[in-house]
Amino acid sequence: MDKSFKLNVWIGVGIIAGGILLFFLLGAYLSGRIEGKSDAIAADRLVIAKRAELFANLAELKNRSAEVAKYRQKIDALLPSKDQLFSFPQTLNGLAIIHKISLNFSFKGAPIPPKTDFPGTANFSMDMNGSLENIALFLDDVEINATRFLIGVDSFDLVNISGTEYRLSAQARVFFK
Image 1 (tube, helix red, strand yellow):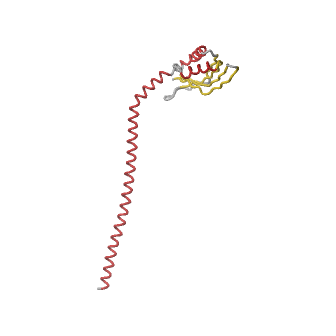
Image 2 (tube, rainbow, N blue to C red):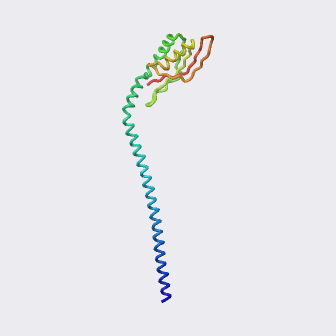
Image 3 (cartoon, one colour):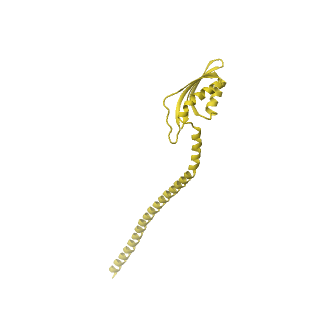
């Protein structure tokens, strides 16, 4: 009976140890699965949050589209058409006469056509002679105070010819729709 008792004790201890080992292995397996599922849920929540943010941004953009259209109309009203650029040299010559400077003007290269989000541009060069004050007033009228044409001066070279006489050579562009 002694041998049978020891054998039964070892079998019982083995069953209990196997049960405990099985319990821990099953717990570890389920813990890994639960952790994997929780990571997937967290990732899904991030995706949902990003999508919600995108939808909110889209809704805001749709609300602003009417406002953007209003500003686009105002900008288009400021920009001349390409055909209206034919009067641009006469406008510059008229301003040059008012400011008492001599002006040579010429378009350079082919104009860049407008795109949906950007106006077209026509490059030009101008050379002018006159007093520094008159040249500055002319540029102020052309670049800043002009209401009919929108231009940007890309580069210029100013040289004192003699005394109060200066020569300005400028490369610029005029915008059109």
